Length: 46
Image (cartoon, rainbow, N blue to C red; front, side, top):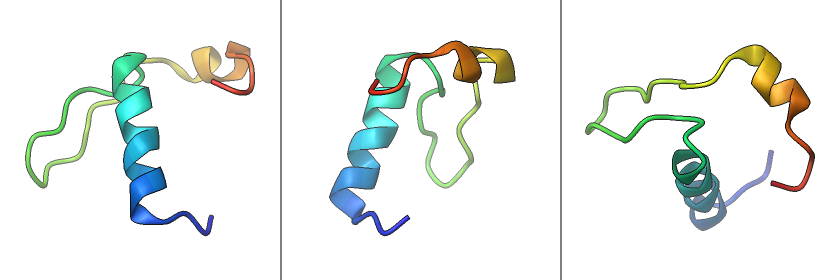
């Protein structure tokens, strides 16, 4: 994707605020809190 760390970290923060993903727990993967259909219904841009 060609993203730098600051922009990628911002995307993670936004997805956590929108409750798309769960909070971080060290090196463990984050839990996905929404279904696949939610991602297709969400308008582009945020």
